Length: 70
View 1: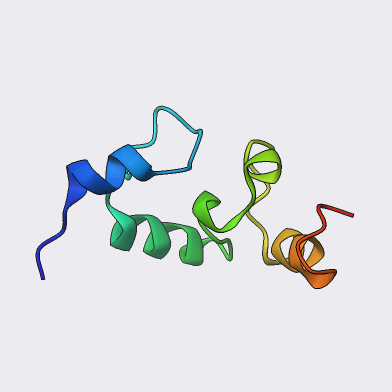
View 2: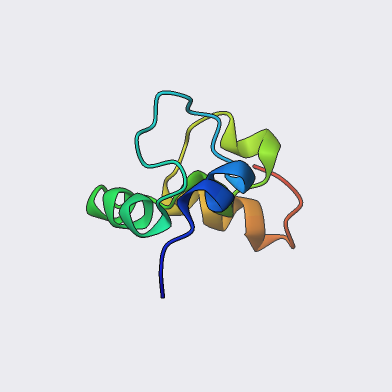
């Protein structure tokens, strides 16, 4: 399967603009997992913009059914 970088980049929810991995999901996921994080696209927009990519933040957001960061 060929990576559709331009199409994926257009839908990328990450707000970190100088990111060189936009549209390259495989690279993005590998990068964040290396630092024990998740990519911004798995967080709601209001949480993503805080740049807290930690697993703890993810659990906090989705623990109560996605009700937001506690």
